Amino acid sequence: MSVFDALHSGKPYSTVDETLVREQALCLEKLCDYNATRPLQAEKRAELLKEMFAEIGENCYIEPPLHANWAGKFVHFGKNVYANFNLTLVDDTHIYVGDSTMIGPNVTIATAGHPILPVLREKVYQFNLPVRIGKNCWIGAGAIILPGITIGDNTVVGAGSVVTKDLPANVVAVGNPCRILREIGERDKVYYYLNLKIDPSDL
Image (cartoon, rainbow, N blue to C red; front, side):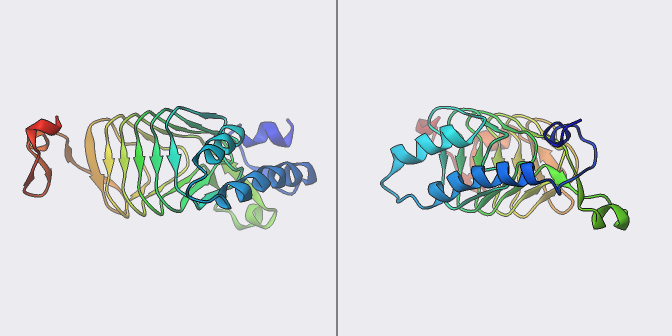
């Protein structure tokens, strides 16, 4: 198995490989270009994202700076995805984000981990597990999503949460470790935040 196959195998592999390092550096060159763009260079940003990402849908917006191990090479965004400042994608294998999902500032989505056994870490071993985030989710500021996690459609992850287990669709989940607080329900059709009511004309 080649080191590039190992990236997506879920099995531990050594990251000490000159070809791997070179390929990654070439990707990061484009990421540097993206982060150097100016606010009015929307077209250039869109073009770079198409080059960098495995897939990116229409009307996606990622606020620089973006941090990504492979500059999005294994990242799949649907349409209308929004990500605020300092999104970190540890994209050593595939990350999938569904349509209309919103990602707050300083969020980390990590596919890579390292073995607990010290002797394997001394050999610079790691493993990668894909992350899947559904449609119309909201990932709050500072949240961390760990390798192998799946989050269902419409789910809200509270700010600062550390997601260590899968989350189903249509729930609000918060905390470290992240736990389901409640289902999205009838009250959410009336109030958008605390006791602040939704204007029916917005629906």
